[in-house]
Image (tube, rainbow, N blue to C red; front, top):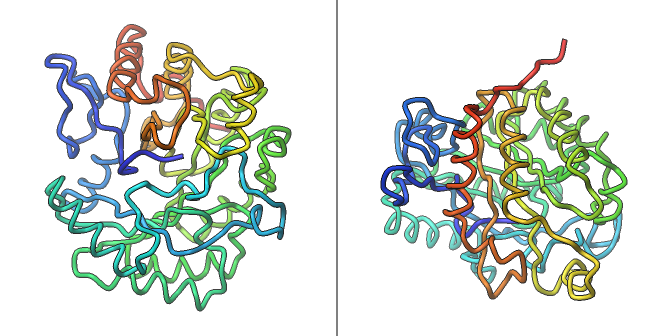
Length: 338
């Protein structure tokens, strides 16, 4: 799943109803004196002292649940772009994607520095020499201050983590390990072809190497209850993650889920239900965990449903309003493990 620019959610001002600047420091939709959650834009600006944006890249990888190594067909929610941003031109080389992406984002958002974001498919699923060559190319630009790498927990052997740890000694490395849910029954149902145990093991081994780690969760996966989703949040809340992405299940065209949806077999979350779930989750997360995303969005050329995913700013506003109504914020109900 992705957003159009796959960056921290822009926030809406409570006072004006306008979109806040994308580099606003640790803001939420509300302009209250105390932020209600920790934004990715604020985190990056604080870390680098500049306006930093990620440049999405498709480096030509696949996934072990697509090529038959573990399964075939890929995740049932994932389309043929492998969750890559629609701005990616897959015909271009990694270097060309980086340069064109930097130019586009610099002009549109006045960005000053950039992170090369290996986004599409599984970006550690190759021999070390191949990974090193791709990562090196992406770092060969004076305004690139680091790399972000999206991957799966079953593609993080110790040798790969050692490679990433080597890079982390000389540049910024942000490792995004997809989970979606901590329930193996659901992981099997959506053809993830890895277990929750593999996820927790990969995070533990990455943290031992002092790597910065984030994860992704999807709310509204088939068969999951509110308690199932909150149990996933509880399980990942205190394992040393730096950041998290949460988003609703979206139905992309030409996916197995699109078939189920057309047949009436895939109920989706209503927007108010989703807002409540997000606020419940934020309250349970550590107050300093960076929130990278709270709503997925895309284009009508890609997404079939839900209809409300095309109104991201409005949903973000409702999330903030609900937190204000409750008088709570991120971490209000966080309980560290003994």
